[in-house]
Length: 302
Image (cartoon, rainbow, N blue to C red):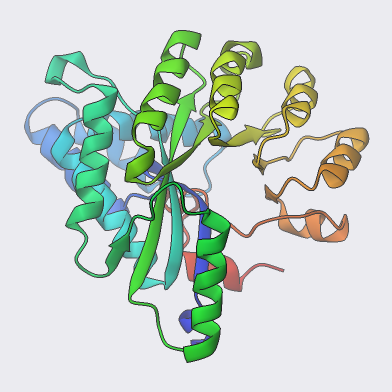
């Protein structure tokens, strides 16, 4: 197992809110409970529950949004999440997060992302590198792989990039606002746009104008696709030709064939992808929700 621990790793599907330490989440819940904002006993079991259904996963996400709305907390969890991945020798990390807006506490989408950036700057356990957008990401990954192959030493630097997520609950206008923010923050490590959130909410055509705009501007696109049965969305999502797809669980045979011919990399379900000779990525998605660690997740993969 030692060789696996020391092996440099790349993580391309890490949700910021889904990777919070459960101890941090419990602490935040207790603080809000003491303030009377929530009833701690009502939410403790939601945080600690094992074997969640998809509906329970999004119930937990709703709770996380309540617990992580202020700038200080966003900065803290960003720092902790990056340090946790770095401790498992992740050398390239893409964090995805939905810029939040909360007028009651003076939080805009921009100030939310500034708090995320502040969290990256606060990391002390490892050096954090922001490569300027003009440098090709693939070249950076190739450089990482070559350097580690040559010297065999444990990395002391983690390259972090950000994907701004469009939540499926958002309007077209809100989605376009997120894309514009991503373009403004390219120089701060933002490389792409993610479409995610509760798959039972929203319509593909609502987000398509924003995604087309992002694509035209050269931002990378990743889509959560096929998490639940939805024949209206899978085909148009494949036709959109994103750089990556997440999950891809509920596909028809023809959609599998199109996915294979397009060579779009996908995360999940690994055994099926391997048998189908599909391009796939070994990713964690949400460490908190899946109750795993990067190392264990990789080690247990068939």
